Length: 227
Image 1 (cartoon, helix red, strand yellow):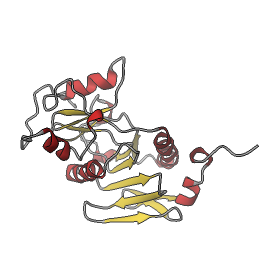
Image 2: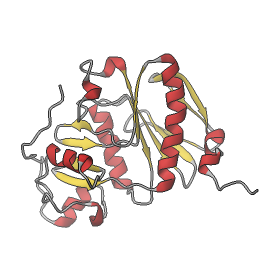
Image 3: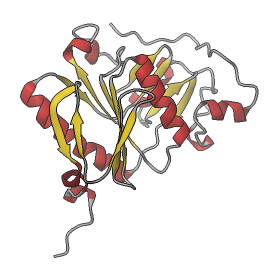
Image 4: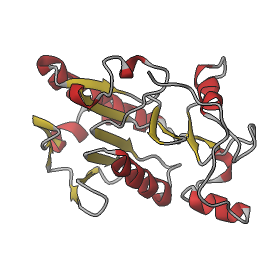
């Protein structure tokens, strides 16, 4: 069973300055960093309190610091549409489960992440009910990030490293501005699919394909048609 940890995290290295701390977080802008609990002292219980509180805030726990997830209206529609295509495929075949934005996962010890979308094969779950706990103590096979204006290149690069280090097999990064999808097979192996490409599930979701022209041209991601 996944337990909620309250012990104080012990970062591998302690930053000397605030600039160092921000750099290690991926140059995240300060307005996304919660001041309470004080950066460097937050616990998993603190992250859960934010997610489950009356004033819900989507936060990740990184190096003992609560960092608010960058979100945007357009990105939520991109994620929702992708979930539609993935769940249609997964629910017909039942190879595993689909998670969305508030899926809090212990990617590494004391590191909690919130991918925009995730797929986990049944065999990946460490216990039959691992996906029913407040915090998932496992790393999904497929992790998806949808970039927003508030994201930085550094934080996404760090996320990708942590995802694969934790055990992910595939990472998709959707870029709504360019209408591209970067497919990461590992930290060092990636390829960019343009709006005319075809996304596939590889060995993680065999048989799944998505024509990106159909995806990006979907009415949900475009201006309302003229009447």
